[in-house]
Picture 1 (cartoon, rainbow, N blue to C red):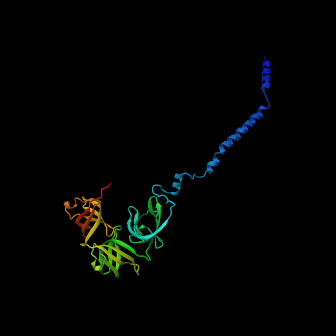
Picture 2 (tube, rainbow, N blue to C red):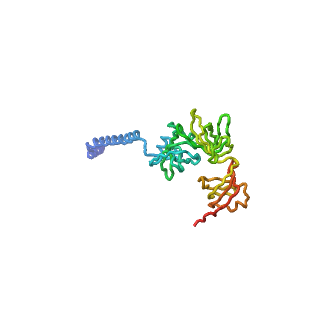
Picture 3 (cartoon, rainbow, N blue to C red):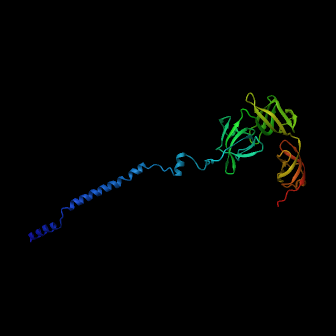
Length: 316
């Protein structure tokens, strides 16, 4: 019985055993080992060598330190035109400059921190730009605005022009202080014996200029570098009477103010109505033609008499 069992056990495995199966299993194990090694080592190489994505705008801003909320866009590639003239007005709040070209007329030019400014060839800033400066401006169209790409201030050989109100005059030093609308600090000029003075286009003397007078002064650097007044035109002395003829362009009866476009000099004047009775101002309308007699009181023009010559034009 025992011999039969051993015989059965010995014969049954030999019937199913195949000597070639072990090398096949060994080869399969080797293939699996190689495949695992390739799978684990392959992704590590490109991860270490991956360059930064330069097309990512956020990454570019972080690397450059720029801020799109503060940085202005680059100026467009537009045709540049050179214009020379004298600065008539400056508006630092709106970033605007009124320029009187040498050929005549007046134009408005915009500027901002992208505008490059030079003074006598050296790099300068907006604080160096003031009314009356002789400038050469490289202008271009930026949208619907005339924009100053470059402003070159010429002070070495040129004259300038300043308009404002006389604050004081120092007789000992011959220094006249002028208050301009665009500058909180008085502009000081040296008045010399050669300085020409006119009042209402008639020759006058510097002694005829009263504090509070509205003047236009042509100036230039003197021999010692001090700004000298070459010509002083007195537009209005306190107490001086004027007659304005033209169209009323603005009416504010609550503030007792009107504005009139004077025909003779093409200037617009603000007039106070404080000295007029309400019955004399009730019919004032924007667009009406008027003749106004006024007196300059040292602060503003005060209307003394208003005569309407034609009613405002009615729109069709």
